[in-house]
Length: 128
Image 1 (cartoon, rainbow, N blue to C red):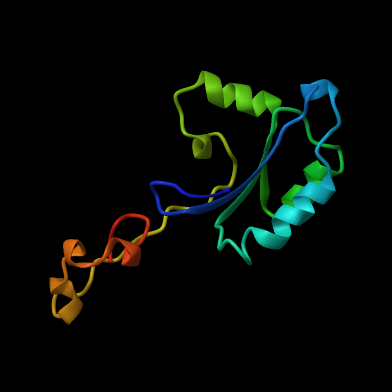
Image 2 (image 1 turned 90 degrees about the vertical axis):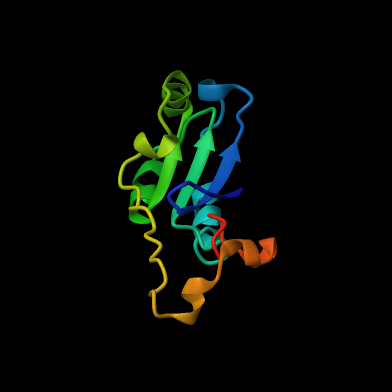
């Protein structure tokens, strides 16, 4: 899944369901390698995330650190569901929000109003 948060960060999210939850098979390095190969290069993600209702293998934990992939297991998923906080506040080392610079007042594009731009040509925030 590809998503854009209110701060303009692009997320690539892979969800893995485990029928037996924590007692089932762990999500391994292979899944993380797939996400690592597509999240940034294909989806342009700032944040790569793998989420599961189960657990991650012992090899997946150190591997994700080397490759900047965030993991949300059953415990973290429960913590998120029980709180009123957005997920990015529960994760470590999330990149800072994108800063969108307003156009220079002398620029001809400064007079361009977003309402004049067709919807397909606006960014995720609705700006041209």
